[in-house]
Every structure is written in structure tokens, then in C-alpha cells.
Amino acid sequence: MLAWIGLPLRWPGNASGVDLADGAVRQAISAFCARLVHEMGFDGVHLDPEPVADGDSHLLDLLSETRRSIGAQPMLSIATPHIWPLFPDVSWPLVGRVMWLGDYYRQVAARVDQIALMTYDSALPLDSLYRGWTRFQVIALSSALAKTSAEVLIGIPTSEEQTATHLPGAENMTSGLLGLLDSLNDAASHPEAITGTAIYPYWETDEREWAVYRAEWLGEKGE
Image 1 (cartoon, rainbow, N blue to C red):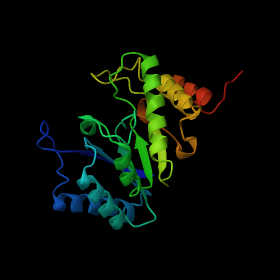
Image 2 (cartoon, one colour):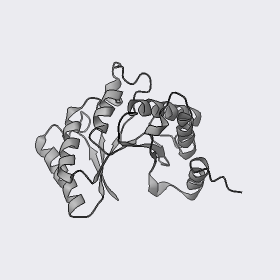
Image 3 (spheres, rainbow, N blue to C red):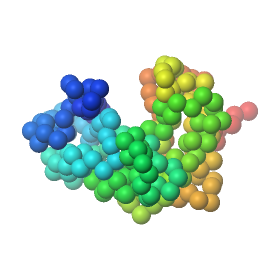
């Protein structure tokens, strides 16, 4: 079991957020992670720092420091933002503010055991568009991380909350899984780099959605 640690980071619209540029703050986080593992018995930690721009060196420092604090055996996992899906190793203007490029993904992967890609919050209005978005996200990420050893989980959304960036009718279990399956069957992808799925949020996932999961992902079509 992993301890989930949310890290709302400091940015112009959130001055009270966590400042990873502060070494003392990073030390406090890594020490807390060590206590969760060594004193409370968790198998590792799952970090969810948001938002993080492409190339942010302070996040890399936090991951390295957390690894040293928890040791080599406990799992270090991280939730990550969208990858730029077109030529992910080519820098594009403004992309790095909202998405990561392939090189930064590899730097993060070198410091963790597990990556969970948050494919959702795409702001797309139709399930067909989100299915296509998920497909190209997974193709880009699997290509970028094909030669790394980190586990890669693909986030599949089941949230019913409607926001400016998440429409449940578009982003859901069905469209997410179908997009993932499309990607794994695409000649441009590296399916061996993908470990599995990460259903989020688990506590909002109902039996109808689990039935879709069993049918589409596990192949249990029923009678």
C-alpha cells in the first residue's frame, strides 16, 4: 500500500502553495515520506505535485532526496501531467508550461519506480476526441519511456465532477480504456513500456464502470 501525498505547488495564482525551490521544504517532505514508510509501514509513497513545468529541476531534487530518505526498496511513485503528443522530444513554445517533453519524462523516470500519467483534464468535449487524445498520449509516453525501467500506469478517469477541464460524458472509463487499447494496438507505440491502468478516483467508481473495466480491459465479456 502506498501513501498518497498531494503537493499543491506555489505558482502565481497560488502563493500559499508548496515551494520546491526551498531546500528546507523539500527536506521536510522527504523526511515525512521516510516516516510513512519506516514508522507507519507503508510500502512506499505516491507523490502528486501540481503544477510542475517541464524541466523543473526542483522536482528532480525532491525525487532524488526522497529516494535517499526512504531507501532503495520502498516504491517511489509519482502522478505526472500530459506529455506533448506530437514529436515529444521537440520543444514547442509554451508547451513546457502545461505539458512535459520526452526528455524530462526520462529524467523523472530515472528517479522513480512508477509513473502514473494523468490523461484526464483535457478539456475535450466529446468521448471520441478524448479517446483519440488518450491514444496519442500513450503512444508518445510509451515511446519516450521505452528504454526506461519505471512502471508506467495510464490514468483512467471515473470522476463525475464537471469542471472547465473535465466533462464526465467525454472523459470516462469507456473512452479512456478504448483510447488506451487503441494505442497498444498501434504500430507506433511501445506496449511493453506500459504496465497497466490507474483508475481515478477509485472511490467514485461504480459497478457499471467496473463492468466496463472487466469487459474492455480484462476481456471478461460475460454471457
